[in-house]
Length: 216
Image (cartoon, rainbow, N blue to C red; front, side):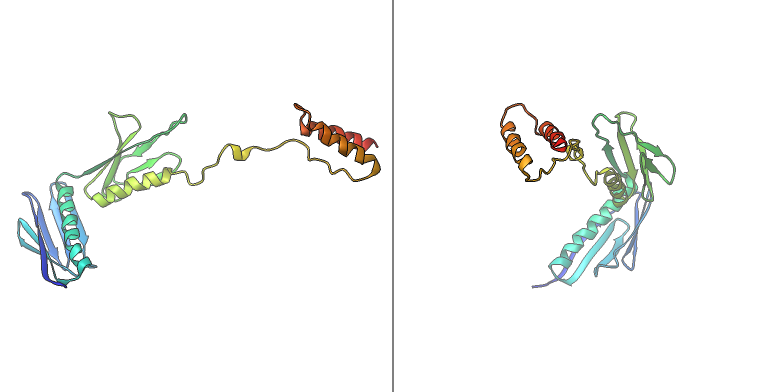
């Protein structure tokens, strides 16, 4: 059974202004401006007063009603971003071979090592001065900050793991194929008897019988 109307409100703190038009929300605060469009959701977003934003859904299904809380959470994250900001910390973990991360300051921040990772718009990255091998990613938008951290993590992931054992190559001679001739029957019997002796390498016997077979 569909509910007639479901609504939730978001409190706007002092120093922050929120405007909404055609399901496009703009949040302004001390740290900057964030914009987000919710045009893909059939909901109503109204600024009741300068300190309250109301999100409501009329005659919605179960999934559409759940989207009301989702929109409120996005607006709350935008308010938190323009007032406090978001910060992610990442540390490089390695064994024996060190990982050196070089950060480029400025509006087009990026991390360089074997490959470079460009940060999203409005995101800055820097090396920590207190902790070794630590990157600090900061920004107003939680989506942009988390996306930049994910790009760094994905670029360092080992796509193909090669084991050392898979590169082991056998350098011994190929075992000769002895023809079933009268002269070679004796060597075939002698070869299988010698392999039963402990400490005799099969590859060495192959070489010996191969040379003896050529001399016959």
